[in-house]
Amino acid sequence: MIRIGLDAQEKQAEIDQYLPKHDINKIFAFYPDQFPLTINAGVEVEHIRYADIIEYKFFYRLLEVIDNRTLLVFNECLRTQNRSDLTYNCAHHYCNQTPHKAVFEYLPFIEQNADFMILLDFLNKGKYKGKSFDYQFLSDEDVKVKSIDFNLILIDYPATAVDTKKYEAKKDQLFKNIGNADPDTIPRQLHVWVGNLKKKLIHSPHMCARYVARNDRFKMPNVATYKGIVPGDYIVIDFPHRRIDFNDFLKITSIKNIRFINSGLKVDLYYIDELNRWIERLGEFYAKASIYQ
Image (cartoon, rainbow, N blue to C red; front, side, top):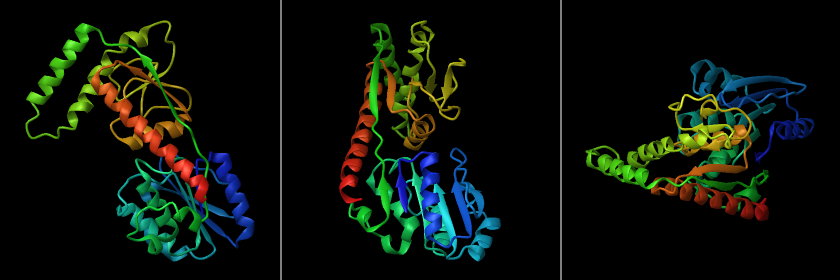
C-alpha cells in the first residue's frame, strides 16, 4: 500500500488495520534521520535508517530473514529524484522478498509527478520498470492520497532605490566573474544577498516571530536554518536551493500557509514563481488522484 499525506497517528492506524488481515511476524521500518516513525505492534519491529539500507551489515542479513510474513515500512524514504539510485535499488531487493509493503509519504513527489514512480517501484519494481507516470497506476494499486493545500503568503518589504541599485551592481559582478562556473549559482547567491536586506524587518518589534533562512549568517536566536527547524510556524527569509530541503521543512513544521518576505527584486520573484508552480503541480496531482484512487 501507498499512503500520502498522513501524520504519525494515521500511519499507525493503517498498520493496525493491515496486521490483523495478514500473517505478519516481523516489521522492518526504514526511515531517514529527520523522520523516525514509532510503530506499536504485537510483533517484533526493527527500525533501520534510510542511509543504512545499502550497508553490508544490513543488506545480506535482511535478504536472509525477510519472507512472506514480513512487513516492510518505508517512512518518508523519497529522498532523491534519481529512480536508479543505489539506495532505492538495494531496497528493491528487500521488497522482492515479501508482498507486504507499506509506503508512507507526506507529499506525493519531490518536484514532479514522475517522482511518484519511485514509490510504485517499492511495491513492484518489475511491474513498473521503464514505465512513465500514469494516473491509472493509482487505481491499479492500493493507493490513498490525503491532499494538503499550501498557500504562499507574501509579506511585502520593498527594496529601497539604493538597495535596488546595489542589487543590480551585485548581479553584474556575479555575471562578470562567472567564468566556467554553473550560471545557476547566480540566482542562489543573489537570493541570499537579498535576504540580508530583510534584517531590519526581522528586528522590528512588530514582527515578533520565528524565521528560517538558508544559512546561519544572521546569528539571531529567532532565525533558524532549514537543518535546525522544529515543529511550529516560521516566516521564510530565503528559500533553500534544493526542493527536498523545503519539502522537509513543510513536513517537520506542518506549515500550510507559507509566509515569505518579498523584496520585490527579480530574484525573489523568481523563487516565488518556482514555488507557485510547484504548488500548482501538487494541486493538480491531488485533484486527479481523487478520481483514480
